[in-house]
Length: 291
Ligand code: NAP
Image (cartoon, rainbow, N blue to C red; front, side, top):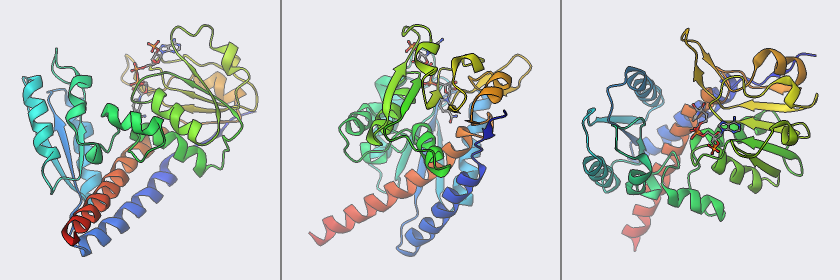
């Protein structure tokens, strides 16, 4: 048996269409949706990634401001820029791009992003709101996983879903999104013991560990759906996920490829979140004006 490939391109295209349509409507209402990406590194692959977000945003009708603070930026400078952007009415969404300079800790800075502009769910308040079911932006990657499952009509309610990884950017928010959809969720991590103890009986396995080849065919059952969030660059420069592609393809019922799976949906969702943020902020302004 060979697993069906759950590619992200068609879904990304549908989301992009929605973004373009909503951006046109906002523009007609006098609102130009605007995303600010704060960068503080000279890492060339990060700059390449940020430029790709800018290109995608602008081709969909969203302004994108790259705020480049340089590789020597200090924590207080980054914090002050995030507070200024949070207070700027014409900016609707903010991303703090990692990596940051040595010694500057992301988790100490993301709290300076206003929750209503936190379109990649980085502020701990966003995760807290997600945990109790209040409106907030989930990290785009976590939402990309549930959108992909929906797109391919893969149900999770009442099913056994294992998430490998418990980071605040992927594993934890994803487990909350899956709980909201009534899945029975198990979260594994580096101390949870042999993976197969959990993954062999899972209907859906999501791997977000950042370890190439971590999940093999022997870890899963024949009818499992496997979602590979991992991105690992090998010594030869190629990009692979956390799944041992050959053995899992032979065993699983369905699998997301890397590249071309979860990652291809993530950028489109960042743009959709920017549109949603612009709509909510402009509606709130009108409400304030009306009194
Ligand atoms: P992270 O902060 O390093 O967290 C990795 C998680 O995996 C941790 O919870 C860790 O457990 C767990 N883990 C590591 N080794 C393990 C093992 N051998 N068995 C079980 N669990 C293990 O990474 P992240 O930011 O969540 O990212 C995870 C992966 O997703 C990375 O490859 C990253 O590049 C990728 N990613 C992709 C996208 C996308 O759009 N496609 C976006 C974001 C991230 P402990 O907590 O016990 O250390």
